[in-house]
Length: 227
Ligand code: CA
Image (cartoon, rainbow, N blue to C red; front, top):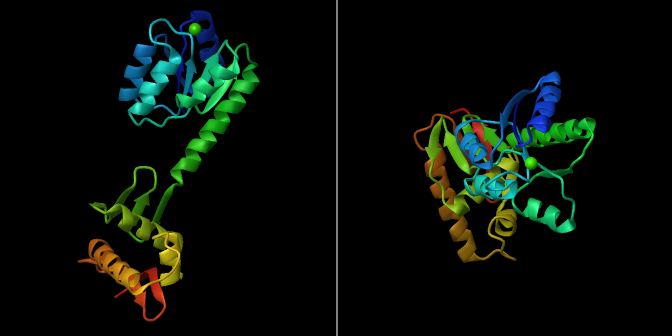
C-alpha cells in the first residue's frame, strides 16, 4: 500500500513518514501542491494525505484539480483549521475524509484503513459472466478482452441483466427498471426488442458461448449456454 503525504512542514512530514513506514506502508513525501499534482498524474497511490496549508496552491485547490482529472484515489485532508465552512469546502473539493490537526496517530491509521477498505469495495464495482466484463466506474464493457461500444441505454440494459444473472427478467421489469416508464405498451415492447437485438449483436455475435437468451412469452435471461 502506497501513501502520498503532501505536507510542507518537514517535522510533521518526517514524523508521519516514520509512523506510516512502521505500519508497513510505503510512503512518498511531497512538500508542495504543484509537486503533488504532478505525482498523482504520473504515479499510482492507494491513499493521499493532503495538508490544506501549503505554500503556493493550497491543498484544496490541488484536490479540486486532481478530481477534475478524474483521479479517484481516496484523499484524507489534514488541516489545522476546523470550521464548518472549511469542512464543507474540503468535502466539496473531493476529499473523502477530514482530520483536524493535531490528531492522534492511531486516529490517522484508523481513517487510512477505512479509506483503503472503501477503495477495495470500489474494485467490486465490476460485474461479469463468462468472458463478459462490466466496469461500473469507468463504464467500460468488454467481451473476450475486446471493448464493446454500447449506448447509454444498452449499458443500462446489460447492467440490469448482469445484476440478475441466471434469472429470467420480465419485460415489465425492464420497462420499470431500465426504461423508467410506468407501464408496458406495444411501442415500448418494440423498443425493448430492438435494444435486445442490438445488444445481442454486440455481445454474442461471433461468440461460441451465447449469453443473452429470450425466454418466449416471459422475458430475457443472461446465462452462459454452451452451444
Ligand atoms: Ca502546512
